[in-house]
Image (tube, rainbow, N blue to C red; front, side):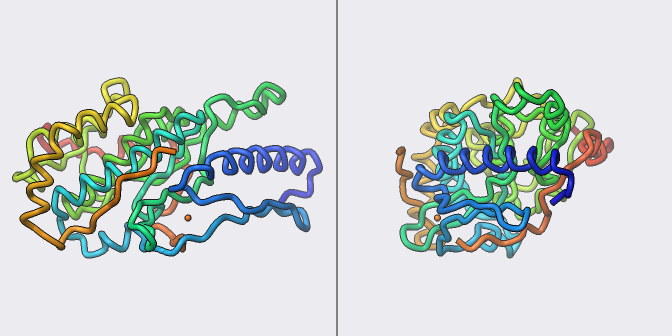
Length: 283
């Protein structure tokens, strides 16, 4: 922590704001509860609930394409959580397999690591104009982060993009950071799973559109569209039997965090263009 008293005061204000947000979000059953927070020797500490379970990154570690019903369960397990987060005026900004745990006690997905959260209405910005400069920093993990977020302008649908990338990673077995993009910035993935249900593919594709105005704008919109494809994919589940881990329906009203293969970063706004493959055909 800086020895500058002004920087320390500012850091404390940010810390207390983050703790307040985490305390509020922890009311959801699939988000770890904040147990305590304190300052000691000029450093700030958060104590969160530890939940026993398996990190989703480990389930995908074999880098093999996963069955569509399994991926459907991931999407449906995450959407109600992120709908709650967004209802609190918060953007997670770092959804990825290493920040998702399948809880051992009931099989539900738990979303962790809210260290990159962004409040839509930042009260601190009203009292310190210097804080507005933070809005230009792109915080997140390369591959899961859309262009507007890397430019420091995350939207609610930026979290939906990350859920879509997680789904594509599971469907294809290709790591998020290795996914190719065409000259328009669209993710190239359909050729990896030619047998995918067409309607399910449309939903996943809409989650990860480059233009955030064309994406789904809320988690509930996605859930509504998934209702149309779920019966067909459930039939596949019955055929595959116990191959697919089941995810219980989430409660509308926490874990052994592990480091991601790709760490959370602050990126320059132009990283996204560097991942485009100009030679690849449009999807």
